[in-house]
Amino acid sequence: MLKPYHQSELIEAGCDEAGRGCLAGPVVAAAVILPKRFKHPLLNDSKQLTEKQRMLLRPIIMEKALAWGIASCSPAEIDEINILKASFLAMHRAVDQLKTKPELLLIDGNRFTPYPNIPHYCQVKGDATYLHIAAASILAKTERDLHMQKLHDEHPEYDWHKNKGYPTKKHRAAIKEFGPTPYHRMSFQLLPRQLLLFKT
Image (tube, rainbow, N blue to C red; front, side):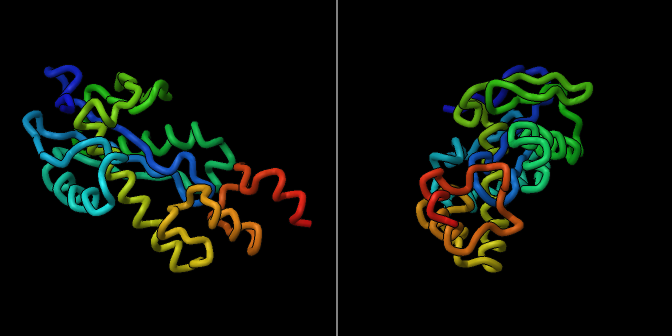
């Protein structure tokens, strides 16, 4: 059973990201403030839900949330500042969009770059602990999945509609055959070292 809050007297926003370990596409973050009494039988860690269940919950969260924001960092930004900093920057941008100012940020993970004038609390596996973070996880993942579907329409050879940019065998085989696109993260090891030996 997910916890509805960390501190009951505060306005809390859950923050999470999706796509940190991908070879291609943006890292997407979301911030969500849910009503204190919000409940839904499906709302759980987005990793434990099917794609269909996440897409079902997406409009419900957007409608019922007191405030929500979704933002991203591009592959070029990831390459420039590194994926960890880009994940935090995307979260900051998502918080920027909240129409209600939170008094505490609940962060999925064990560290975070402080947001100006709002304290935060980090929770490992926070998306399986707090409703706010689980809701943010769902918005971030569904937003990114929809974006990767659009990129797949441009570059179907990379199978992004299925792998979402993660390093599957088919994705890496396509990189080896066709090379990287502008949507790939060039600071990541796109191909295992043994494959690079045969690419020349």
